[in-house]
Length: 260
Length: 322
Image (tube, rainbow over all chains, first blue to last red; front, side, top):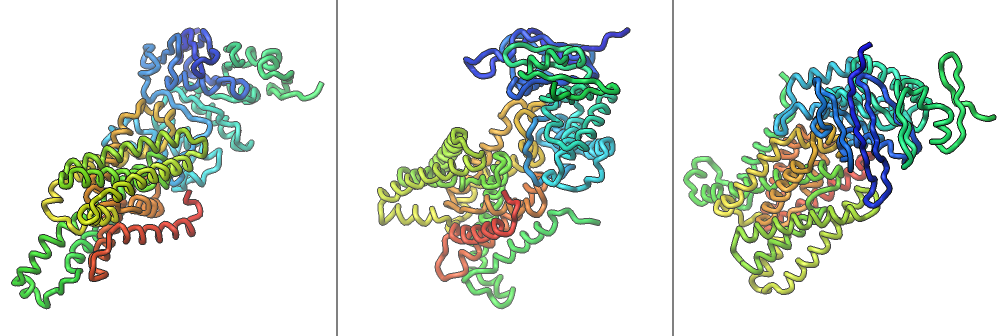
């Protein structure tokens, strides 16, 4: 069996959240395989966003190094220009942008700073809209989209920037059920196209639904990483979330079991 | 063939430009032949009205573009050199220049620019330390900075020579381009045109700064160098205009907001259109300023009147403005 390539390689990473504070992460080593879906599970404020920002190079680790696998070699994360897309949890964008104008912003790495988008850029945007099935949204403005539609458009921007890794901060948290299912399907489709996806959540159920691997973060204590079903055991989750939880399987799906 | 969206606005500006040449308090000769023979009229057109009209158009270009860029960069439709305190600070710098060095053009320009930049930095730092909604913080900080420099201006007016310096400072502060002539334009035009050109070629790129800094990083924009360059250029543009025209307010606030209502947010469209609308707005205002009454009305009074009226109607009738 061929071992999958390691897409993101964190080597004994340490990071201090605020100067003089505790180490949020200490001696953290993770190897995220290419073409997988990984969830980051933890309580609010446990450092999920911080870890995502470290993985894209926006935050610099105090100790250790992070590498990104591209074109057959491992390069320092800082040189991965444009290949790692980050979608923040709450993104506020000037509301009068149309969908096309917003998607074009994803082409920034390919457009020189004093040039204009080319015809090719516009074609790529059209292709992405077809692929995501958001053509019907037409010329609507960003402000008039629903939460789920806006997530689609943002993923479209990540595709426009030709990202190989998509870091998604709480993509599903505030969506209604219909939109959740659509986003799950879309994330699976992205994986089928060879993307590596990491998303954060405080709900293990989201991880059970789609994540191959999971990262379980307990604030200032440690980080567990491995196959979702192994890592997100009732024991680990109870310890990490600070409350006793039980998940039951029914027809291959997991449910949160409330009560004794 | 569908005409480019900028076609009619440009056409309108050109029409205004030539039309306003013939508006004024000097009677227009009845026939063209008479006009050509009338040396006074020709001189009036080429030496008085033409430079003034040309300058008024560039005042409009510059102020509206600076306003637009600040609104985009600060993600705040209220950001404008006036509200951020840059106008007052540049005014303070220039008045200081008039007081200390009376006629040194470049010193006045330099002081206006330095104080303008200082005011912007002060407003940004202040806004960062106000723990309120970001948009509100910036506006509050701008108002405070503006008030500080107004106080400074008051002091300068107090110590200025009431017979000589004071009237020129006061009239200049109200905003007027009545004494623009080719000599003064030649000095200020190179800077203005360079700044306008730089900002114009960045017209698509400025869009991207609407995104969060983490997203910018993931798109390969890893530092603020370009942002600061664009911001500095628009401050230079504003202050070099103000050091000649005095404080002409409201252009940078009202024009970009009207333009955004019409064509949306994309700076690839809003920058060219703000240029043209700004040019028209100041040209019309200045034409009114010089021809409505027998005496000259300060330009800043007209732009403030028209601008504030327009702004009030946007506030009242455009619900999702903020």
